[in-house]
Length: 360
Ligand code: SF4
Image (cartoon, rainbow, N blue to C red; front, side, top):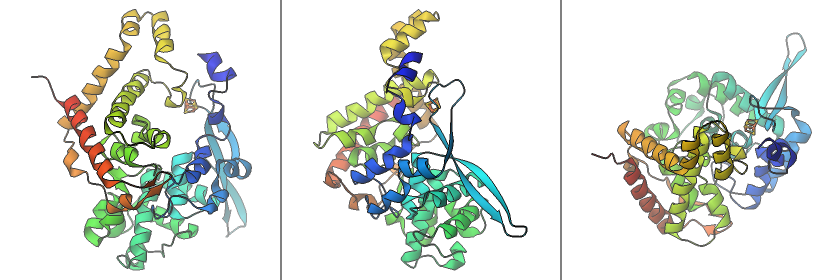
């Protein structure tokens, strides 16, 4: 396992540019959300590609405890203290998702500006993905006259990095009634001020994949940050044809494979290395022969348990609707097909409900 991780190309991309390498490729595929998902591609990507971050802002790589890959990329931002002309530099870990939410989603195309907004969010303890997507909604609500500076306390405008740095602080500290509402989610604020149609929320604020119907169905019904729980984004990128049964089978089976890895407390980036056969050999070698022989059944049992737990703790699938903005998205496959999306959600919801049903 160690030699596959360190002396093959399997993990190279994670160490080199890291997940920010996805920015250029998703932009090329017309699957990268820009300016509150008003577009899915823009030539301005050149300012914030994985290469640009590595060339301009990268200080060093780091790793989770014991990992020989070292995919964590740590960049820097400089701050000047005007009072005594001193400079300070701060280290900010960056990744694809935070760059999407504080970069393309806000129309920011300068790598240092992206890190500065990210840093502000980290300091106030915000979820960077949700924070950026929520500020993108607030910006479009401002454009449409639903919000004014009285609520936002700063003039929000796509591309205005300093305004977003301040807004991130206001959002993270709940500076006024508006920001306290927005801190509970874009839809909560939209219920009060209007603008639910263009809230980029799929259950919670979207992850950075405007890849198509399968991902939208998956994130709206599956678990938080479901790009880690199921690979709907990858399915969209590889399948032009529409086949509800195949797509939903993929979502369910892919979740099982990821759960087996979750239970091993392993890194999902290395899922190509941790094949079921290799995992079984590893388990066998440390005395878990029974589990090694029944890994698939164990993972399916865990899948059932977690859906059962989710329903038992109040999850209501019917409460999650898809805002109109998602139906206006155009990807490399063309416009979103509302009927296909509806069919996927219906079928996936049925399978999830079956998993969550408790045996009497
Ligand atoms: S464990 Fe995974 S996330 Fe952590 S450094 Fe290694 S490859 Fe990266």
